[in-house]
Image 1 (tube, helix red, strand yellow):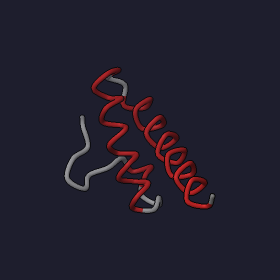
Image 2 (cartoon, rainbow, N blue to C red; image 1 turned 30 degrees about the horizontal axis):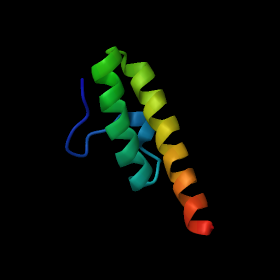
Image 3 (cartoon, one colour; image 1 turned 30 degrees about the vertical axis):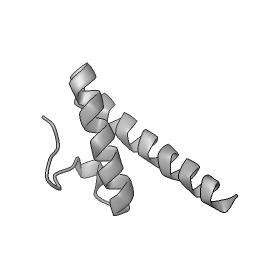
Image 4 (cartoon, rainbow, N blue to C red; image 1 turned 180 degrees about the horizontal axis):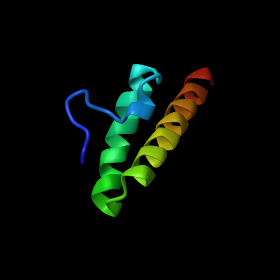
Length: 61
């Protein structure tokens, strides 16, 4: 089931909004590809964290 309109997996509840939103976006794409919700949730969160960590490094330079 894709997550839409502010709906997101419960494991994203305590994440900052920007990470939660990005993770949900990524998770939806993974879900389309694999059909595996567990994989989509984990991948979405991991990739969102990496995205913003990289963004922070770029701003710090």
